[in-house]
Length: 103
Image (cartoon, rainbow, N blue to C red; front, top):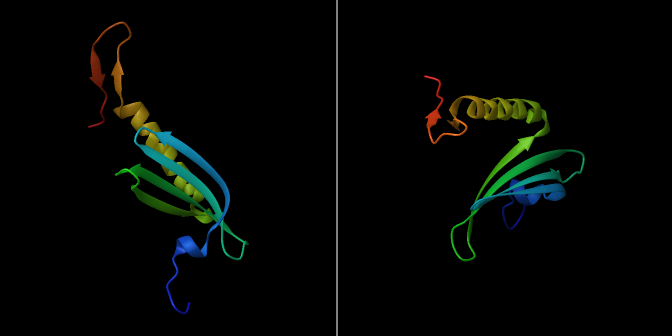
């Protein structure tokens, strides 16, 4: 492109769907976007965190359709591991807290 540069973000910008998840000080955006040719699509996952009055720190992952299933499987497995093995569990009716860890 003459006279400047282009990034993946500006080249492939046609947004089809978006979902926002607020999580404390962070907001996550799940966006489905089409390529410039509109013949293909991909997902961006953006973490946005306020670091100033009107300033945000953003981190972005681009996920292409051929990787959707592998990504979802890995995410599901990771969440199941954390929920089943690492989360702190409290016994009902007591103040005792134990941490379950795989060693």
